[in-house]
Length: 279
Image 1 (cartoon, helix red, strand yellow):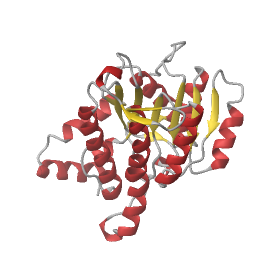
Image 2: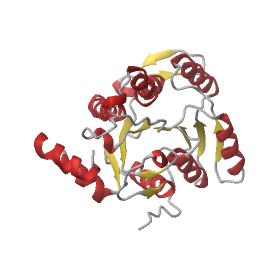
Image 3: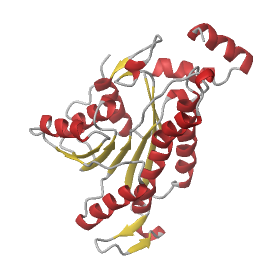
Image 4: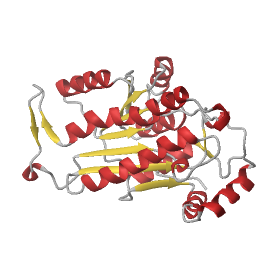
């Protein structure tokens, strides 16, 4: 069953999406632009961003390529200083960039783990640094920065952040030691920040998708239950962003089953996963 957001008026004038070149990020960019949002899209491939910009040229909104390296904090800080100068701080930030490298214990490699975590975990942390700083401080165009006092916190939203993790972060899965560890860390990170941000006016949400058809999942050589198309995933995300839920999950039946797995004792869990995956 497809999710329909119809002619819903979206509350954001502008958004920054990482990993916007393909998959969920590209579909989310298309959907937001179709509803009149100015989307700043970042990705490792400038060619993908240019193609998406050309495709969305006639949309109600505008797609603007922002080719920054999320692994380089200095590069991100420079981009945010540019937004400061122009008064263009995005109202919605979706930290979606990520990659995958599946390997078993026999191929375990510190280098491969670091390469994966540098993008999936540290890259997201690098993005949160300038975003949270600006959402929680008063920053004018001359770079005069002051802490945001309680009197200055508006009753509405001061900023909206969504972090894309994965259900792979719930419990350990075969060949996903590095990938799952990074996603588990993101889940814990968001839970902690959610508590810290209460009363700040900053809205933080966590997105934990199941299997979505993207260039990354096309590398998988195992069955993917409840596989969802990327455009449907984007609609589910937008619907979730409009809600007050902390965690946005889909497809729900599959994800709730995985949530139940977290309650199983290790003996039962390891036996069950071995039977399901053959690993």
